Image (cartoon, rainbow, N blue to C red; front, side):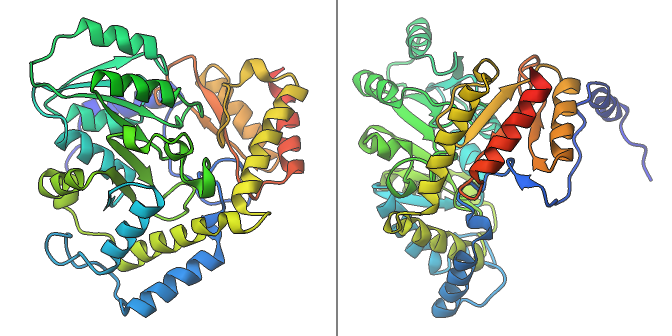
Length: 386
């Protein structure tokens, strides 16, 4: 057996030395304050049964898609589900991808061209950053959620006469849980002829009527060039989609490598997406829906932070993600372990995933969390950080 490369071994040792070594965990029976399953859809038996019925009614009782969508894998659930998604999100077209990572690297490596310009929030997701690295366009970051800094950056760069300019942000940031002023950003982009690109991974299923996302809640659909949505968070299934014009979808089908050169999602995966959207459509039908419970829990969590005088430790958020800053990998891991030992699944976010000194405990709220559980976990946290 060949010797493992020394440089790689040293990198692993450095991670251990920084107390930032990553290992795969196992499932547990702790109270969930860690997963992205905000509406509990991943464990929803009705969604599971719906997906099975969809497969049976479509006569698609097969294990795999058999190939890429441009070869043999474009089974009939794809156009049905993409039409459903486009109508739900009030857009002309939706194109399903195998994951949010695939969607982001595919979009940013294919759409911005040589000579174009990308201006992106400094805290955008790693998948967006990786896609930007694969692009031939020039890219510059602006300060987090800072429209004035975006304007300043734009004024300092020179572009070619026919350059297209893309402004990239997220409606809810996964490591902070906060949001930019999407209206102000979109208005500026429209005034200047820029293309707004918004990742809505952590907003769909959380904000807006029936969980349609922040872009629709604010009525900005026609001002946004592209939205990236994922199904592995509040929808509880797997995959992603890029929303936009029919021309955008056509271009991606022709030039997006992460779409073209991969085996399509299985019929079961697409049936699950279809079933998840059927469940979203019914959220407002019940006064006690999962979405209503989630929103109530977000409000209660914020009120408990105030009651316990913990505001100074938390990043302000109206989303399902709330982050308590605990500087240092050792300290944040220690507190997380103590909370876990008391029965609560709360994860530490370590550097280098986030900036050194900004390490944090990340609390994810769900429709299934009880008020008592929220009260107990925050009272427990207060004993460790005060």
